[in-house]
Amino acid sequence: MENRKSHWENVFSTKGEKEVSWYQQKPETSLQFFTENNIPKDAKIIEVGGGDSYLIDNLLDLGYTDVTILDISKNAIARLKKRLGAKANKVKFIISDVLEFSPKEKYDVWHDRASFHFLTSIEDIQKYKSLVSNSLNENGLLFLGTFSENGPLKCSGLEITQYSESKIQSVFGNDFSVENCFSEDHQTPFDTVQNFIFCSLKKK
Image (tube, rainbow, N blue to C red; front, top):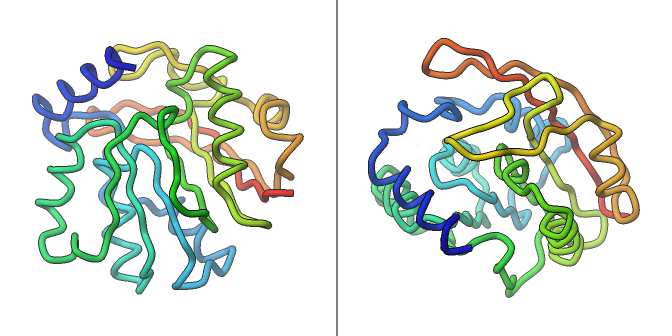
């Protein structure tokens, strides 16, 4: 865990937001998930690995009132708080490795774009799945974005795990029903393309 934390603290202290591949000014795909599923404005939402994401800005602008951001990096959280300014008072911030996270409440939506695929051991993947399942309310929704089998093999210098719909089904299928999956190209700030798979899953 300490090595992971050191890695991400270094990333967020040395690189600007447009110097990382996951940068998105407006996360249209994630916002579409909230629209299509009619997520209530008072839903309890957690974004995992969301330190540099603009999803939070957009959710606040849309009127969402119960949003939590979890990130392993205190530098990422500090950067996000600075960007949000006074709006930061409307957000709950948690600095933690997701695998060390002990939720104090349950959520209606667990959002993870480009964090889960950094887990590469079977043990860590299963621990994550159990955490999500135990952290969501009945019929809670998981929106997961990972590199597809046509995507990169590494990100930020780290090995990742690629996914297909069937592989996501094999990990989460006992506790979740897979509602929708699709692939999508992400254009990075470096004019390269990364193929993602996005899946919406509902807790059984």
